[in-house]
Image (cartoon, rainbow, N blue to C red; front, side, top):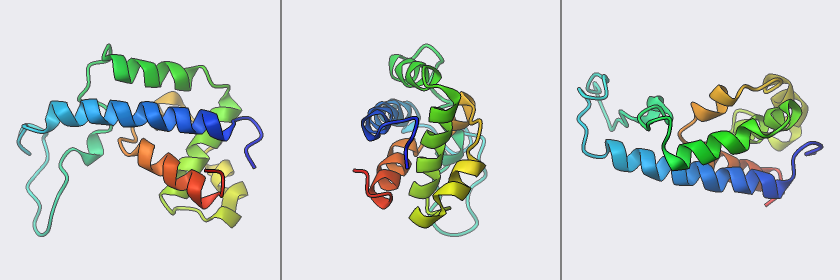
Length: 133
């Protein structure tokens, strides 16, 4: 299933994404929705920072830099597989839909992966769903 990327590499990226997410969350935890440029929700709970990805972190943040460097070091086909694992982890695709997930993720850019603040969880769930964890 993973031809260009090993499960251990996915776990490493997930670990780095989790560290970057924690750094991002520490940065925005005391910000208001107005400061995040998000309107208050009409109903229910709302995570104003969810759509921000890792954007609140400065580009030289060590956790974000490590995540970016690791993703950038992957060949394009491996980045596509990484995004496909994340797509399975979000339940956009099932295990049996791997070829479709991979086609959707084809030529994934580093920025596409760095826009996903929940990348750690998505990768962990994707590995589980693909029976690779």
